[in-house]
Image 1 (cartoon, rainbow, N blue to C red):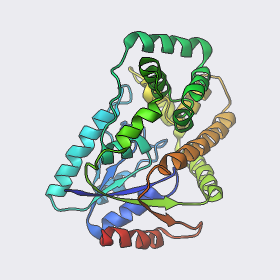
Image 2 (image 1 turned 135 degrees about the vertical axis):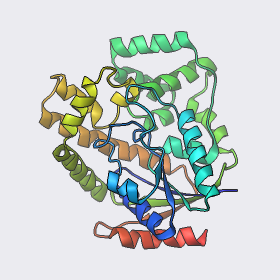
Image 3 (image 1 turned 90 degrees about the vertical axis):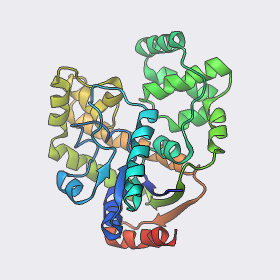
Length: 308
């Protein structure tokens, strides 16, 4: 069975830098496990590796779809499986690096299918979202399935509607059905290495990252994407940093308000990631101090890579 080393943790936690350092030391390849890095030209807001970094270290599952297109977990799984097969066939170490918990679960345990889609239910829920606001649907999800509501972002219309659809079709919370998925056998020989920082340090790093993204031209990047003939798909437009900047560009808030909301929403996302990651029982957690270097963290991670 192919061995896959997962480098996971909260947003802005340094996963990418550590993953690249591990790749340098092992001659490995990085498989991105990020639901937004799949979109071309969405570079600054998704904190993609730079062209120079990608020239040095082979990266996969990045820039594989247009921002105007929808993207699914199933499509990601197909891309990642193909990349892992190629890397493993060449004898290189596979490093799955990212923080999209749903993709990590799918890649390691398989895809949760659930009941088939019901177009009528979905159309009705979308109409309610437009009329009542997505927050009302998220609140309803909180009443019928608090576990799912706790891990689904309030702006994630697709997953909110899917969770409500499953509840309406089956009478059971999607979180309860997914426990059956949790019991599946692993698809790969998985080694989970988690980077864990204090909340204060995570928040500081989030604020610094948002500041850096603005300085790098996030506003201009979003404006350029919106000006493209096909624009952004609803899924891409919900990405952190993009949704808030779109509101600013449409005159719904000032730049300062958009920046502050990006920080708030990213901190909320980090909290949801921590909740998700608690479901992984076999993670080798590395506690990273604020002043720890990438090299020191990679030293700690290498023990698990070599020991596996």
